[in-house]
Image 1: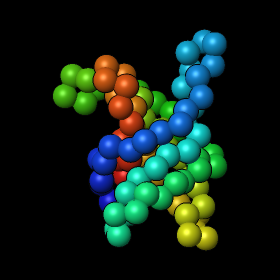
Image 2 (image 1 turned 90 degrees about the vertical axis):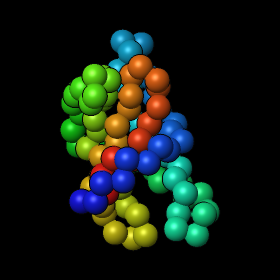
Image 3 (image 1 turned 30 degrees about the horizontal axis):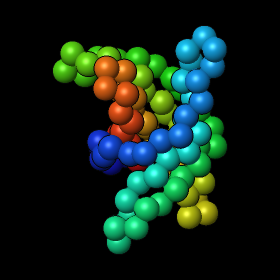
Image 4 (image 1 turned 180 degrees about the vertical axis):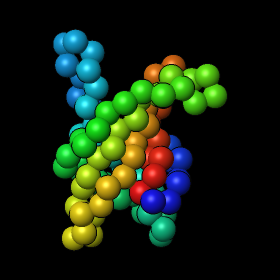
Length: 87
């Protein structure tokens, strides 16, 4: 997997307990066009600290251009920002 660490636009679902689940996100493609990717499956969820910032890491799976791909999303709790970490 290649490391990107690009900030993305995300639509997510919060439960009443505060559990966060990503649904779909947008990222700029190679031709500066916005590409929308629906999160088909959240395989794993974990937490880590990156440079002192608490982050929630999601390993997800989606069909992108007809191919099943596994990738990682990160949610920075302190700033409420989403990142496409690896793909």
